[in-house]
Length: 155
Image (cartoon, rainbow, N blue to C red; front, side):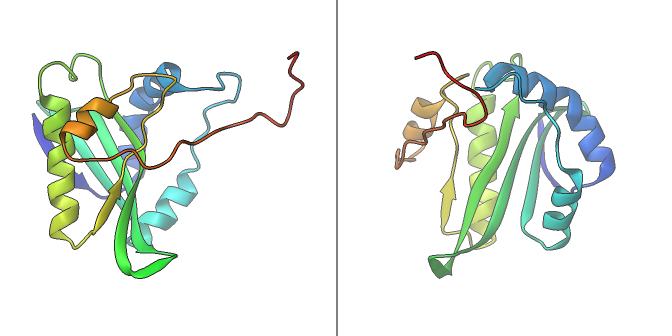
């Protein structure tokens, strides 16, 4: 398994799309909202230096990704922080310690560039890997609530 930092590109986006669809099907809270990546935004974030695209490859084939937005925090401008955008490893890749090794490798890369805090999102709708993060020294800080505003609920 090879882990790499890759530049965002149309080729990477195209290669990642089948995994992104699998990821979406596994964790989405709102399956009726169409998956529609805004590739132009990703290009802008990449061009501005704020996007990190970490990939996991097995014999050259993309089997996972962990994308972060990296920048000084709006409330702490002296602190560079990384916020995970999307993290996915194919189910067969998750076996063993590959996931934890990938997360640690990403942390090491971010630390080497001066990132002070890393925020990882754990989707409770899908595969909760919070215990893995806690074993790695992460602490749960917030709970994110979501509410659909575009439809009536019968409750």
